[in-house]
Image 1 (cartoon, rainbow, N blue to C red):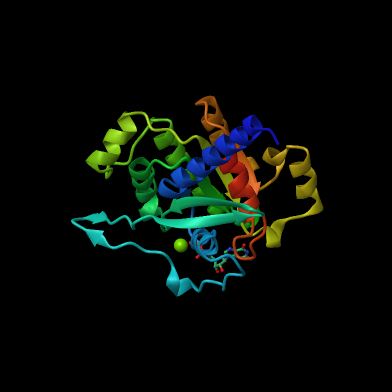
Image 2 (cartoon, rainbow, N blue to C red):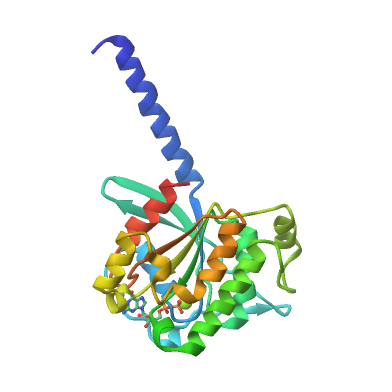
Length: 243
Ligand SMILES: Nc1nc2c(ncn2[C@@H]2O[C@H](COP(=O)(O)OP(=O)(O)O)[C@@H](O)[C@H]2O)c(=O)[nH]1
Ligand SMILES: [Mg+2]
């Protein structure tokens, strides 16, 4: 190897090392929002410690304390996403999905300004019109905030300021959890051909996804199982690497 080539290798190696160090100090931020019982806490736990996650009983639903009439945002924590030889640090916060916490999603989004915003649903869209209706309304609420059409009344001054300063996520991901339950050969076919939007779980949300795309925000549709660790790292890394 010539010395010039060697020098080149050293430059590239140090560049990659610096990039890694930078990401360790400043992880990509993700925001995970969505209705109750879709698997937000399970995903948070899986990202913390990969492996099969114990089913989470109902009495351990995520809730938030109130202070001066406002719900308190939990602090963000870091995860390492490992995929083959890659490691990607990300930071996130686990927020409840009940409708009274919707405004907290928006608060968290404008305070932490995540690079990727996830909206997570599950197969209940297929059988429960009420769940579907509420989920679409929730996504609409989030999209309203992202495109700057409407902000929650309870937004803090700092969040409002960041919103007005024009924060936008780099990427949006409509994430369907519990693929261990709903995935079929038909789903595989749609995914293989980039036709996710035609899937009956995605279909009711197409209007909202279109609103995001119209606002210039890429909106992906992905399938995972947080409890069984199916597709989780693959989806996360794919999104992070496309930033
Ligand atoms: N079958 C299946 N169940 C899951 C999966 N992820 C989460 N769950 C279950 O769905 C329920 C709600 O999960 P949780 O993480 O508390 O949802 P959250 O309310 O969005 O935080 C729990 O009983 C979980 O064990 C999954 O990938 N597959
Ligand atoms: Mg939860």
